[in-house]
Image 1 (cartoon, one colour):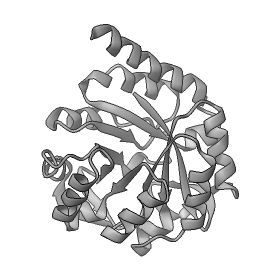
Image 2 (tube, rainbow, N blue to C red; image 1 turned 60 degrees about the vertical axis):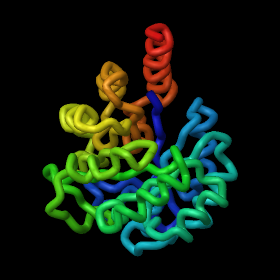
Image 3 (cartoon, helix red, strand yellow; image 1 turned 120 degrees about the horizontal axis):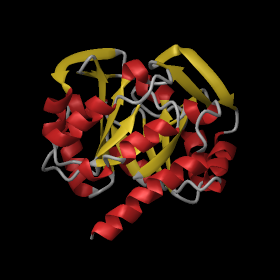
Image 4 (cartoon, helix red, strand yellow; image 1 turned 90 degrees about the vertical axis):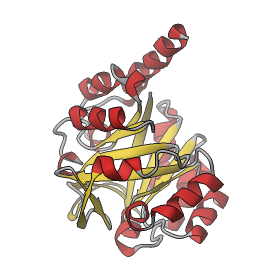
Length: 250
């Protein structure tokens, strides 16, 4: 299982939002590249980056900060936020981003996202952001009438790398990950699922790790790391044990 430390960008700074509300942002760092390097030094090989301004604007707003992160971080950077055109996708891959997360486009133009997934096998992640079980888009500002599982099934044979499932009501709130909803989604589709939203401590990492063989590819954690409630090194050790068990099983 992969642990993805999160760097959310707003106005070039590292922030965390409460329930996706841009008005409820806590600033943690003014140097995103330095934060990325710190995560690497703690042992992280993967990083999840979100251009929050881009999510609302529909196009990149923190490109300089993202490029600095990619340059500083020696591992794989996964990026989301306002990526909705072929030009966006191609430019970010050219800039060194390893995987791209698409959410609003997945709901509003699924054929385009499928095309991108076929053009870039294993490099496109579909964000399935849920508010009360329904898909939310446009930086979570709009809630659709499409159920989470229904959206996910549309991409079953498209070659997407993973589904990124976020329970918006828990995001940034340290309420604990929504294990039941995450597992329910993983069991309904054949696409690996990344859990996001609400991670409060090592117990959440352990709970997800126990179900890694049921389709849980990884977990994204942000505020718990920044607030010191979760030690990244410890989380990585828990995740690594799932890989060891998987290898032993094979």
